[in-house]
Length: 152
Image (cartoon, rainbow, N blue to C red; front, side, top):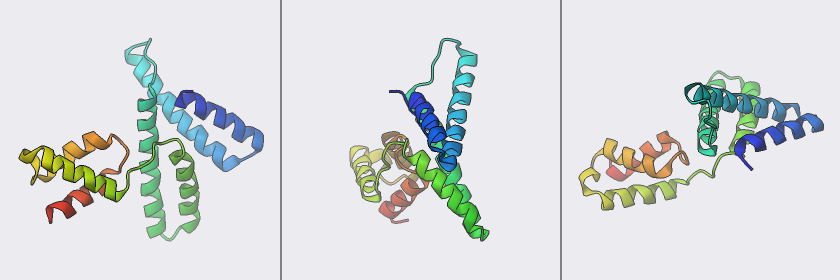
């Protein structure tokens, strides 16, 4: 089952169950995916959105919600932060499992040994590792791990 179909089915299930918080989040995510699909079809009418592209849209939404949580927490709005956290949990259910800090560190070490030309270069390592993780890790976390490994 495609991700778009799963979102649609989950939206219908949330409507039937009366789970308004989940419904709002899934509906918003589905709207973002549909907008990306329309944008892609504007260039090529026969093109359909792949699951990888839909995941990318959901990852952007998850990142936006994480930033909102951070800002609401700093602003003393715990109620809004909780609402965003609930929405983030719903979105993360559709995303691939994120890599742990240790897994990212192993990828950084592997990139350093595999490509000595970038072993001491932050931006080169960042490019190599981000190509490996393909959306399964936050860029900020990858950057932190690389800095730790480089001793910077």
